[in-house]
Length: 547
Ligand code: GLC
Image 1: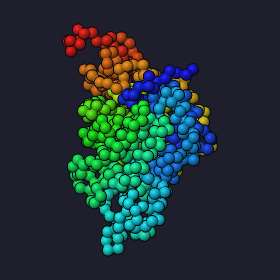
Image 2: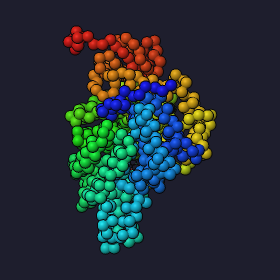
Image 3: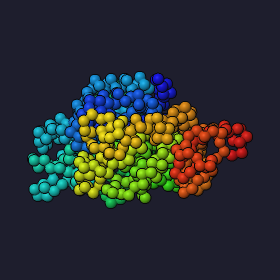
Image 4: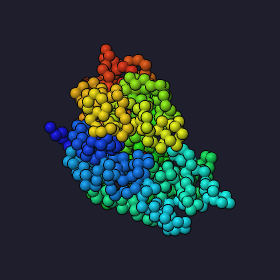
């Protein structure tokens, strides 16, 4: 039975409240049985996404790519990787999803391209001093024979940021050598990316997720990074001029009917500088990684919620709530560890993990984040409670290799989803590109879909309630006085969310109806590490006056 269209389907402000499901296409669903996820697989599972209750899907890069960095090394921004399908399939998918009320957001990667992209190949062929090289950061080396790197910038994937080509010049790459950085001072680079936006907006995409959005502009003098760079002083991150790029992108987006949104991947500890990206003529939203990185502690989460809402308010942008993505440790694993915060620098193999505890907390976190004001991101597989996979014999992630094997990398959160059956490949044809654990039978969609206690049922119930509760999504929050280590807040007149992060059960505030809990109540109390959603009687004018 088709479910009703999302109320957001015709709303120009849909993005302020949307639930956006992230699809890492290689690992979502396999349509042609070759062990690699593809567009056909997504098309066949659109009813699953509709029933889950999402408003939009965001695809990590699906373009032709040598996959040196999981597709973030794009060789052609206007086509689809043959392993994932073709352009006609993508166009059909966008329309089929829309017919179910689901918008499509795609990833754009402006900071760098693949070394196999025709521009970089042309730059290599044309040689030093050529106009083709000016689209990149080619430089002579230092030292008498030019054998020293032009500077000592450190890669986001550890290690060096310069690679020397046979004619002696060096080129800059903030990630891997297969991802040369573009020179955003070059008009071709700006024009090309605006054209790419139009290419996809013309095909009906509702928005773009902007990869590494704060890195585009570099100080052309390429100086060393100062010890403590002040705001805007870092030579390759968050330079003031980057905002011009997003202003012009916003103009492109705004020239289309419906609201086409810009969503930034902006990792930025300075919340004021972060919010600058969300000024009314720039991006619509950006990922709130601050909340994602916090440990499972009430004071920490509350501080993050307050500071992120305060940072968004002056620019009138909604916050986003993100528990994970294709780069970070799965929540059921992270929350089951002694240190439940997230940092790239501290990921290690063999970290002791209590998955039962982590799953319980991830359930509570799912309800907490779905109740907070703004839009919500769900990374594929989190709705199934998949853990991070530690045992992967053949890793692919350059983060792992560039750390000399110390950092496990990101393959562990990218394992193909288990759909059905008792053993790998859980509904995939052939051998999945990353091996799935033997013990995932209880985590398949098939085994969870009719179990009211499963993570999948919890997500479905939460997203349905979120959709039918006008106070959820965009709006304000009002904290309710509560016991220590309890996060209780009201949304609108009659909705309350309570998360208990303390060690014991707590009483619930007065309410008319218990809407949903992540764990059953015990003697009417909310147990440790769980969340309850409540409906209280609407606030009367008298009660309002007393507050
Ligand atoms: C972003 C992506 C990540 C990628 C990197 C380089 O952080 O999320 O997966 O490796 O950018 O493009």
